[in-house]
Image (cartoon, rainbow, N blue to C red; front, side, top):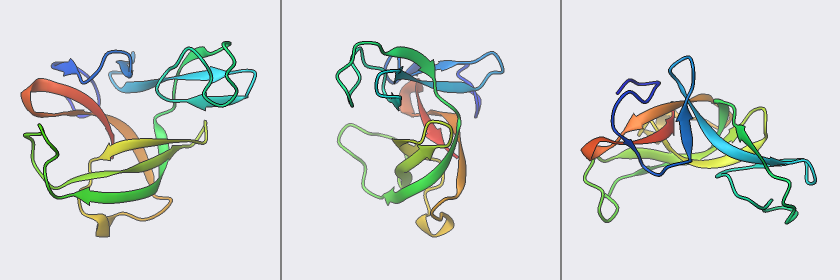
Amino acid sequence: MTSHGVDAGRPIHEGLFESTADGSIALIGGYSPTSGKYHFPLLDTCPYSGATDVQRVALSRDATLWAWTAVTAAPPGYTGPVPFGFGVVELVREQLRVITRLRESDPARLEFGQPVTLVADELPDGVVTWAFA
């Protein structure tokens, strides 16, 4: 497992992200020409208009921080380290907000509008998910 690509481990859920040619990852979302909007995760039907013209797209890796906190108590079933960062980022190109893990766990080190980038993040037991750093 590297900090940018998925070299080992298993995805937390199939179809949420994929490895790219440069070794990084991309979230997989949808775009509907009818609504002109993007969504994540990929759905067959546009959540904004109900249209069925959804196209599968790799979403951009660049985002800005919109909201954040630190998770200080492990959620049920989670055996990894705490605290960990958790928040909402807005993808720059798509203007789409995504709920996500954050690599930074100290809320004092984060600020609204801070640029962040999508990275792969390995959880306990070799499970791979996404995060923004």
